[in-house]
Amino acid sequence: MNRGKLMNSVKRNVTYFKEAGKQNTDALLKLVKEYVEEEGIRDIVVASTTGETGVKASEIFKGHNVVIVTHCFGFREPGKIELEEEHKREILANGAKIFTGVHALSSVERAIRKDFGTIQPLELIANTLRLMGEGTKVCVEITVMAADAGLIPVDRDAIVIAGTGRGADTALCIQPANTGRFFDLKIKEVIAKPRAF
Image 1 (cartoon, rainbow, N blue to C red):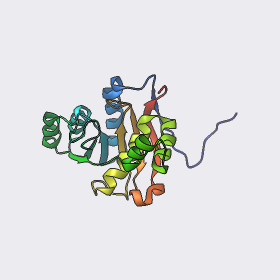
Image 2: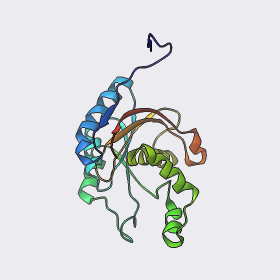
Image 3: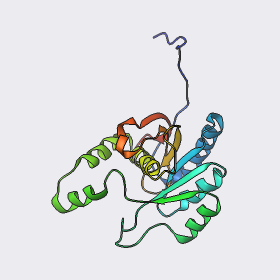
Image 4: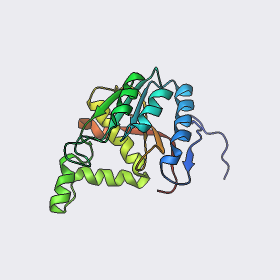
């Protein structure tokens, strides 16, 4: 096949990690830093459960609009949050924002599944996104959460970082949207993701 020169095209390098997981966090953040500097992107959204990844991202991307999205209270244990207080202080000291709220792609539907054994539309969307990995699903989810909270604009691209379990292994360039216009959201580029997940 003659590849020749493609008109109106952009050639990008995508990194595929051999396996999903926390061990990819530092390499992923380095890749994103290079991408952000090259593309001039200002908005960075990062999933962080305990705040460990949030601290790293808030240090690396100081001066940008960094939004750290955490699990909501009661996600694992009633009335408790997994975000560690020391990490929270460091994230805020680095100038980042923290958003804590209900997952956009599960919310009450998770309770319906657990109590009644039936799946609802939001969880169907979440499971479809998981075809590209857990990190992809989380990236899309935290994008709409941050947009709904007014922490990122919807008229310019954002870099969104998430992972499989703990740490970070997925980074996407996303055109954000609010949940009310969910299908206006576009995954524009994959910066990195795990190959095996």
